Image (cartoon, rainbow, N blue to C red):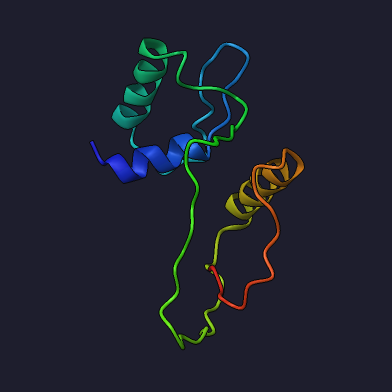
Length: 108
């Protein structure tokens, strides 16, 4: 099982009413899709349609003194995938999970 690929697919996936993931627009193989569905049925309390927040962890990025930001072009995505990313970002912004950044450091 390719952990990174599957966890990425889970993060990009919305669950349906039947608690089944919509894996149509993923790059997963059929056996990987089956494994995800099995995990959701085994651990239904772990997966949720809503993204959440935690106060148990505070994140900070310590910069190296005198470090300078560099220009980096954004990653290129297929239009369908880009739309999913934009919808997920909007949902997280609306829920207060993330906030806009004015940092000079780019994030492709």
